[in-house]
Amino acid sequence: MDEYLSVQGRTVRCRRSLEAGGLPIVHIHGFGISGSYLMPTARLLVDQWVNVVPDLPGYGRSERHDHVLDIPDLARALIAILDRLRVDQAVLVGNSMGCPIGLEVAHAAPDRVHSLILVSPAGGLQNQPLTRAIGQLCLDVVRESPRMIPVALPDYLRFGPINGLRLFHQLTRFPSLERLLHTPVPTLAVLGGRDPLMPPAHRVREVGQAAAGHVTVVQIDQAAHAVNFSHSSELAYVITAWLNDQDIFANAECPAGIRLLHMRRDD
Image (cartoon, rainbow, N blue to C red):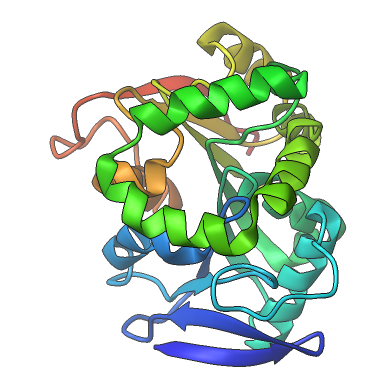
């Protein structure tokens, strides 16, 4: 179902599946791009859960504000979208900038977040200074699937290079992995083994070991940054197993190239 909602005085595009019931899964896109590239993963999850894929204000087909919204603004907009859809609690699945947005929502309104799934959580020292992050981003472009070009390029051009650069700079300063230390809800982080924006595995393990509560970190070896698009089958498998409280690696159907980097469960 493709619908347009009135949210904070602006029109917001939202795609929503209606086939299943239960806890909604809300997919949060990255900077400068709409939610279209998240659809391959969302479609694989519709048999068990309602899936919601909004274009946040100023992105894709959603109406712009008179200024580019920063990460806290986008988190507030996402909460307003949940209110508009009458979603009391949801699983948040963020990619790239969608991860700090999801973290902001989880910290600001933990009762609204059942659990948090962070796919390619960029931000922090690994992406500083900005010149380093731009180099990482350029390297990621050549590692992504060519099928991503017709999906992403129109969105980036519509959003504008100056706006994109400003928001990307803000993203690099957001300590996504460090915020995991105090995440108030069960959290799954999924990293791409070929993602140049991510820290090395030993740093991820250090953060995971220091984190409070229930944190699981999984790597998909052959994925770059846009895991939700390029490796949707592997990601959907991991999400399904984790949400159903199953051992990700015990199932014979577990795809090749998935590795556990860290798991901590405080019951």
